[in-house]
Amino acid sequence: MNYQQTLDWMFAKLPMYQREGKTAFKKDLTNIVAFSKELKFPENRFKSIHVGGTNGKGSTSHMLASILQEAGYKVGLYTSPHLKSFTERIRVNGNEIPKRKVTSFIKQHKDFLEQQKLSFFEMTVGMAFDYFADEKVDIAIIEVGLGGRLDSTNIINPEVVVITNIGLDHTQFLGETLPEIAFEKAGIIKENIPVIIGEEQVEVKHVFLEKAKERNSEIFFASDDEKVYKTDLLGAYQKKNSKTAFAAIKQLKGFQVSDKNISEGFLAVVENTTLKGRWQILQENPKVICDTAHNKEGLNIVLNQLKKEKYKKLHIVLGVVSDKKLEEVLPLFPKEAIYYFCKPNIPRGMSEQILYEKAFVFDLKGKKYSSVKKAYKQALGNANQQDIIYVGGSTFVVAEII
Image (cartoon, rainbow, N blue to C red; front, side, top):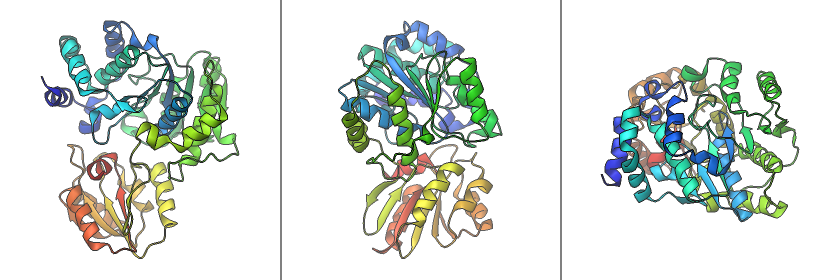
């Protein structure tokens, strides 16, 4: 198989949470443990930081990678989902895994993958760990895929554990209440390993304190830090993420990281890691902003930041996935904006008709479009130079216009 055929095999043969929804979610670690054994336990051949949480785990992971790169280390970075290319998920010092490595890895292990019926996510985690071990990285930043306790990444024994915050997202898998979700996320806390909690939240603080006590792990709340760290990431929410990343670096033993490395790492996140889609300004006149925020907590911060922008008219290109609880997110959107409702081009994208009808109930008015590209093109055509276009609602909407 060539690269494209390999990807098609990975995506199509095995149901994937991002595309299909609940059917791709597996509730135990049996497969990844078996695959790790097959690969001769690659996760034991590099040091790591494990990053979980509802919002901000991607940005925090990229900040950590950037800082450690500035300190001269060879740094692996595993994140999900990807925006444009599958290889974005697995990087070393900002460079994506070569396509030929993806192809050869799948070819080499195809019999095992078919026999064990591994999910897309499990095989990708195995590929990342194997690649980081082969590349002899000094440390890898590993972002949790979904939840924590039963996530495929949860076979590592990291130097530091990070949990950014807890919000109501993926409730069909993780639980309907914040403490239930916190319990799943707290499953990455390991014996005697320091744990950083990004935001101190009254409803869930006890869950983390109990788990840390049970695991004999020292616990730190990054939100106690009064300092603001300047970063090249423009979203207001990055203030919280930078405090979390700073706290994690301070607990990382055996690595020499200076204050200069930290400040320079914060200012070069995009350059060092090629992070995209976080309050990213795509053009000026009219100003186009895109952001991958997709749940209540994330959208609340982003839409508040949008209110502070100066514009004549606000155009919003909006698409969501079908399991989104619209009654929670639609009330956050401004009523005075002009909407361009669209369906992201994945099987679990919500139809533009349903979104249009639901939005109307919340007094959000506009037109519907059969694709993100058509909606975006129309917004660009309608907006004048003093207007702002915001594109978002889902990672998959942003992916189509970046």
